[in-house]
Image 1: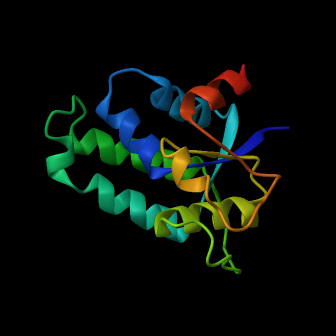
Image 2 (image 1 turned 45 degrees about the vertical axis):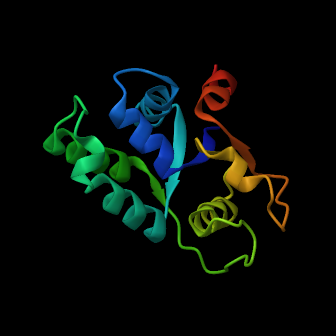
Length: 142
């Protein structure tokens, strides 16, 4: 059975900014279907908005057309999940709330993020969801 994960925007951006690294490996795991990523409306819009920031990618080796193609490929292979229940207040950073809610709604085992600290002070606990950095996720997928 495939591991279910929510891949946070921070991982997507890190993968596009670096020519190598664990964030890029997380995307490879998803694109090669070694794990299944969940996607929701809010996460999609957040990724789309951040990827449109040209100043963020000024030094990137990946062109805007290549970023768009990768994002489309990633979105196509994701399992889309509707979030019907909001667990608020929970994570101090609002962007973390919708990621955690997506994980709970979709039954994900993992939230993969560069910002694990954002989730450490959650008011509600969801023991079935592990919040991990990309390197930890890659290690667990071996």
